[in-house]
Image (cartoon, rainbow, N blue to C red; front, side):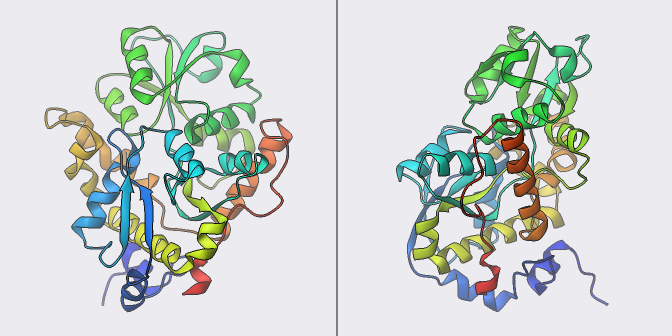
Length: 331
């Protein structure tokens, strides 16, 4: 009897809500015409292993993809809005902010579950984000999905993120430097950088996902972002967008089936061979970052994030249209 793992469920079209179809269907999608400028994987981010895995397993064969590098969280979203990218990571709050500014961004494929962590030094007396009120913390840029989710998760717990901390925002590497020099009491950072710090002795006091669940009572994982594009691009390149959607879920399926791949590909994360403790932690700490689901549960999460963001004054209003679309119905 054949054992059905997550990848075989994807291939069989049995994943919840938005089934992906079979291997022959994937081949048909891979033949989709058109060229797409897509976000390249970036060292020091959780997406760093995605392109290497796609190429290793031949999942991008037949797709004409031009990879465009970004400089970290926040930058790729700017590149999408400027036209330098057709497809990039984009979170629901960022999509709503863009809609308010006249840019109609739609999310069409899985991105990453939230992997933003709060860390303090090993000998720190702080035990929770609440203890850090009034203190200096390092964060990613305020236009990044990581920052926006940290802001939201704090707000649902009654914390005024931008006024109750002295925030030093900037590129991920800048935040790491501030933290390692002791210039801030805590760092709010993404994977794999959080895992590297934990392996060196830093103490994780909270995750944004846990704070969100605590503040809202929700049980499903908090989604950080998705694959986003301008709605006009998706409408004009629907077959290509659908093929990119399948590609992304196939890559995530490999990770779910073989989490040890994350340790094997540690150098793409920027983790050296000499960081054995960090390498050993990668499969356990990062595997849940890569979802294959795209459908009702994810869309409900997006709606919840946006509803809370409006209620708490983080964004002014809800977008006029849904910021997400399910291309699975096309297949």
